[in-house]
Length: 183
Image (tube, rainbow, N blue to C red):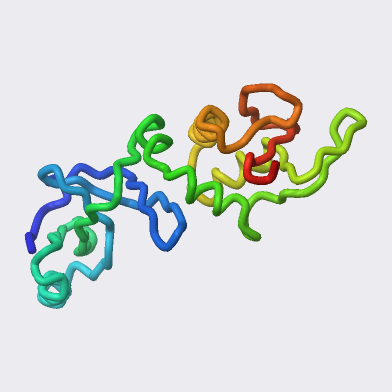
């Protein structure tokens, strides 16, 4: 357990996979280790914050670093996460996402709406609109539009989805896409 000032950390978003879902969460790096943001405790409760961080450190048998950070307004606990990856740039964030898990999420009942659609006088079964996929990625993974489109390009390039009309690009519009799993 370490007590630090906020200026000693490098803050960055992290990509974390938990229980078959992908999340972008607040993170920090300290001395080459990545940390996930935990509890926040009022600044005047320093003793309680120290006690809580010690309890967590002991609960992890000292195998996980616990940081107690003075954020000027409050004390924040940060927990080391060896499975998280940095997601601080478009390239890193998009590259860090496990596409198998992502596709499973997108195909789930809470994913994109997959159904038969009409496009240019033809009906295409089991597909979704590019604009819907972009909106889903933005809302569920908290991505920018550019990051969502980059992830869509990666899904096509790595053979997870295709445009039903044969266009190779991923667009944020009415074009129709299908997962290869639904072919």
